[in-house]
Image (cartoon, rainbow, N blue to C red; front, top):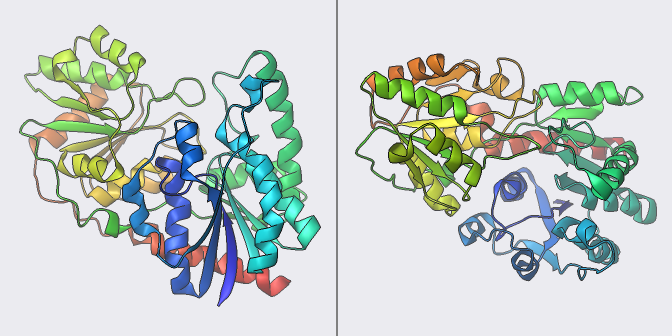
Length: 403
């Protein structure tokens, strides 16, 4: 059985969306005769940096999986604001251990996933020093990211040019670069015209039925629309205001819906709710485990997705929604990663996040045919995590054949 060293800053018990893609690849790789070895961060370091811990995600980690976990560097007093993040503080221990792991495990390939991106620096180092070929997996754009609220001050002066300097050196020596959407692949092919276009491979995010089928839904008496995740300022703000305005329109029509927000406390959202007079129809749960989040999603009448406005975006949330088998309202553009996923899938309404009346009309349509029966969708097997891991293995095998 061939062996691949999987480099991931976040891996269970780390919680959050950053862990799911790599964890599912690791889960299914042995089915395709590739043995994964994981190099990641230890739990103490996650806790030190106040990163989410979710022990329910450990169910996908096999007992015999080989995992190397390291600590992180101490937080320096010099340029403290630039190095306080966990990914940056992992660089020193990562570079220190990578050689030891490669010599001991003798992997056939190195696979490194980001965001976060700075730890990907170890990949070209490992290739130059130890002769191991590597594949880079970009869950989000790196230097090509569209930033609504760029960093200012010393951070802005350092990190922007640093990303522009580092990314070409990481991608330049990669055997393949995997991205999550066709739009993202097109952008990177244009940014690196010297590369063969086939070097950029699209493997989207997906869903694993095992995550959902065993979980019972929360039962809600009133028609409940649930948004699970974060509303982010700056980089990709997902604006709930048009939906809140749509709720006001619905109330004027005599239709009451509950907006349930499953995610970290967000003062901006609470202020918008108050401004729209929707406090009595708003429920905020705070952070929940992945298990409890799915339970909430499975019990909801409608699942709300709000895009960031970037065409390259292909949020992992849409796949959790598909796995929960509930109707979906996607507020996003008709071009881009989200539109490419939802196209042709049953019980999904795609509406631009600028038209409260159209949003209200869509919600009313779902409201009029409310059903607690799970949605049956016939054309989403291509998004099964097991199938997507098979696509990844094809990339692995192709790279190995060329060596």
